[in-house]
Image 1 (cartoon, one colour):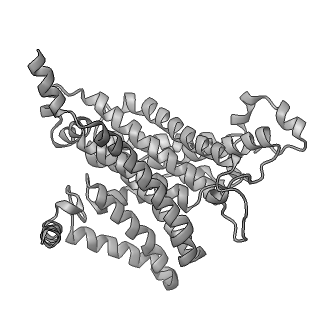
Image 2 (spheres, rainbow, N blue to C red):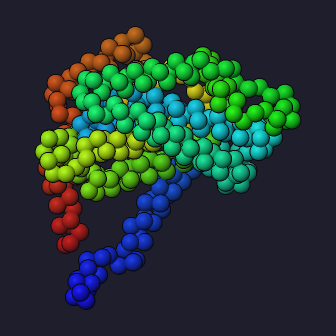
Image 3 (tube, rainbow, N blue to C red):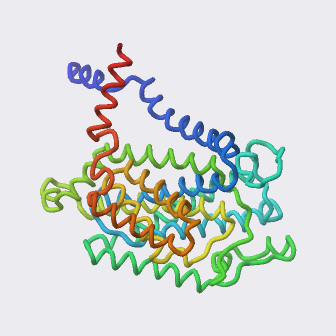
Length: 384
């Protein structure tokens, strides 16, 4: 028994290694967020900074959808619905929460969340930032809960049937949100504090959408969440859960024969993807300052599917590269006016003809032959 304990202890990583493996993603996320917000953003200017922020949001959405469409081999067409749910929840918490907690819906954040063009001499982190972070996480959790409720019965299906169910879910979300009442416009603080809390979720703007709430999402928060998303999903892919996902994609019958609970793993993947979609929706809403139920439609979900397919089903780095390309490309073609969408569609068709498996296929960028050769040369040079 003592020999077994000794051997087991030798297999465990030292405490410092375990602590460092937990801390370095946090340090990397904060460092990249600070670099993007205070160095890259001011240097490239307002319009380019907006594109950079949108790239970050699309990376989160594309990588999260990769968990379902890429890892487990399912075909979800309702990803935009989870994004919209997260955005509405976060916007409602920030708007109504600011009125109840701070007395108004004005911005009360710090420099990390300031989106104005004038100089702002406030603190680095304000009291509104804590409400914003809580609202973002709440939006992700609500979207994850919706993903669990939808996925539990529907993920027993596969292929086209699952696509139809998720597409129908997106339409249900759109119709329900458009059927809500107009957004509360409180005339006095007492009226806001005396409003029944249970009635507040019913006032989400209806067909006009939800707007007039303070914006907190900046390059810092967006790119911090990009790092968190990438690290988390990379680790999931390398874990036993990720291997179970990939086995389901390759052969469901063989995976089930090896003792994998197919439905449980599919629901787990669907819930995980929905959480990060909700976070991305919260970031998008809290940057624009408005959100509309029409964003839950098929078109937005189809944009995310294109990113996943173009990058390569199952490739996280491929989804990242595809999200970057498909965010920049429409903006680069903006000067071509009416020919922009035609050229955009033709480029996608040509790409899928030349690379039907996507940019990286099932591999990550460092698994490709030229990348391994390059990394091999650099490691030899470093050793020399």
